[in-house]
Image 1 (cartoon, one colour):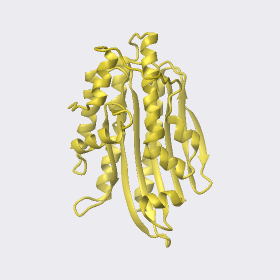
Image 2: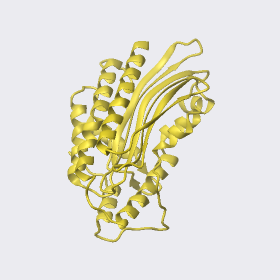
Image 3: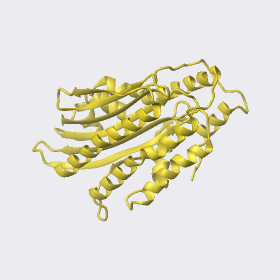
Image 4: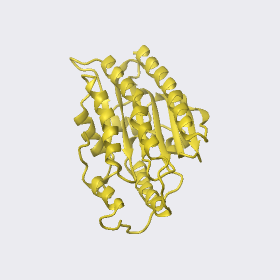
Length: 303
């Protein structure tokens, strides 16, 4: 199993460099800055953040590998005692400046758990990617989901329809009765079975992560130079508020980071730089803004 976790960490380290360099090239102005951090209880990571660019207002592409005793809150969550863990993954959130360009999030991770004798007792992969537009372009939604579906179709372990359904269910602000965005894929606790191996899951995980740029970059290129008004920006900031609400109220990744004494700047790098909350705000009927909300309240199939 060591070779598996080492192989995955090597992969995400290379992927971090590939994604950050391509996004820098696309922005043309801003550069990622990198922070290396160390977790006192074991492990650490590399956080890369881009800010105040011509295309990207704020974004982060982070990798980490942390390990040690599973904190009591997480022992209760997994219903185990005296367990140790190892967790590694890449997590990214990109908030573009232009409201016509969607925010994107992706996370690809691997987790191991050990008993008090150091024996591996469980391991699994999880992850996914999802798109959060502020203005709906159907061809963008179709493109993003098509790339996701094609990756799933290449692997026996992956089920696009199931993972899409899980994404729609997970990235849902129940207190608002609306989705965070137009979805993508979400999967977790992906283990070996009688017919599927962890290598099968690793191959799918690497394939999907490697195609993140194919899913997102063409959309950015199509939309980044479209004109927009202060009203468009205001709507973007209001919708970003809903993004913040999900991450702080519902997101398990944020919770895991906080419960395991992760680096707070890395955990909260997903939060956008400019946000609004307007009391009892509703978009004008039959507007482009209302069109987006209708889709968020009623998730649809895109491919």
